[in-house]
Picture 1 (tube, helix red, strand yellow):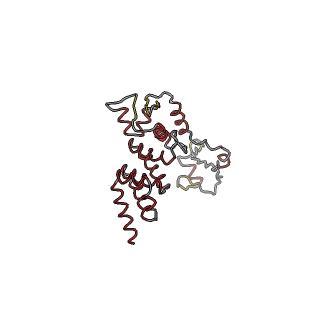
Picture 2 (tube, one colour):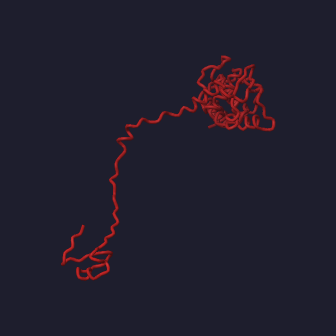
Picture 3 (cartoon, helix red, strand yellow):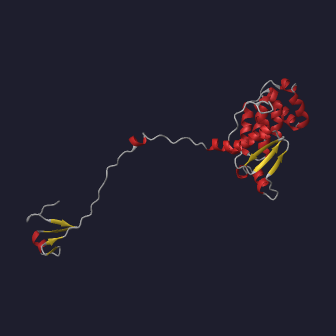
Length: 247
């Protein structure tokens, strides 16, 4: 607030005048002066950190667990698969979203609600569906047929390639790369060639060429099968080994 006296000047909108000039001006009408003010109120910022810290974090997502239960219960399933004598229910839309092969089978011109799956074990097909629903592998050490986890991963890689579930195929490749040994090497190498798994193939050949496992490898049943099922793998194997020992 500004106090006026006869000696002071009034500043208004950039104008200066003394009292006499002011009383004679248009600003004073009937001994009344109207002053228009624009006020800006600035609030001090209040930190909410102390309140946020008291709020519990939201629970982690449970969607994968819910989808796993949906698959297990086969609730409202609209397609059934006959696999190795077992009947497994599933949901078309989920399968179609995750696999172009399933999309063609279930929504294409030849769409069916009952599908027979040939050349696949029920445990492998269930593991494939589990991944499609949850984007994760089932937590198993042995499948229903008593086979080891390595056997399941082999079959699952084949299934992933068959149904074009690329992320599952890549995941199986990574698992097999980390678990190479002499007994499983030939089978793994053959699968890598048959299903175009370049990363897995290179790792297998590197493992063979950079270690002294050739004699032990040639004594395995898998090597004997490799000679008939995938002779090109043998050629690459020997060429890789020869180049390594020439270094």
